[in-house]
Length: 371
Image (cartoon, rainbow, N blue to C red; front, side, top):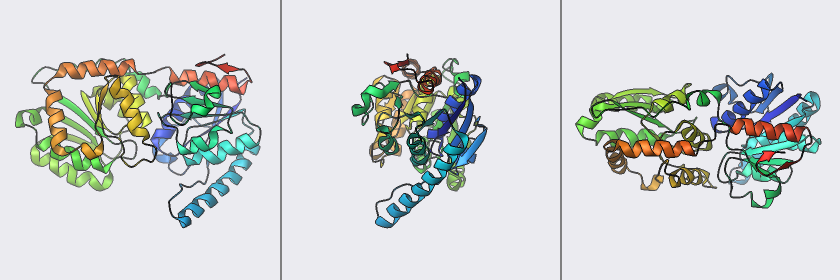
């Protein structure tokens, strides 16, 4: 019964990329897609297969009363606009992917008796999804257990975290072979918005490596625009070949070409590392209230697919030591690549699409698949 699906996601890559993966599968199955998000969509979802995009006001709650009140007012305006959108487009189902921009559309759909699904990509349920969880028809998760979702187990289905077609396209690429004197491809990034700590941490760590190791390095690094000049100058001074950009449109291909990754551990990052199968040193975002990135990294690290080092413990000297040791032991990197790939779920978008169709059609759902 293909009809219209209203997808809603916060405007960063971590929320939009899995939504885009689901949208692509649903379009193939004949559904029409509308996207509800915020103004950042032009940066992270230029190829999103939506017939229409609705920019919905939202806000992030701060700690002081003024910012809290502003966020609440913005979310109320978003809810009123979302009600108008839902009444106008009449979706068969609404699906949310987290972030505060998800709240107004999913709440409006639920209040309008439209079936609703939320997907949580992290090992810890996000605050927006926690608010919505009791109000939606079903909850999809990336992991078998998600902290904060325990009371909703009766309507929770593990689907995995959807990854884009560009990730699936390189998922079969073998781990890059490398001789002792061949270049070593190091990929460094901090999620779709970048992370300044990588610009502060990685260049001095590489400078501390032995010259013969530095000479073989080929660095691909995502930098925030304001950090590009100083990071580029540091690599030029030490004679390291480096490709620096604020955002890589072809990030999945860059991951596939890497012998090793140094990154944050957001949900999309961990999912893509696992599906492609590449070893990573993961440095979780330290100040997140829910410590979701730490939980994500711990899952992949426990499986042998990488190494999690908290930011408070990570120094240039520590990173230099880790890099030198791993570069000298390619067997460890290759084994971690295999372990990471075992954790990957390349069929997650298809499984989530099955769940969405089952809910839209009023079919019962049980276990980890649509019945």
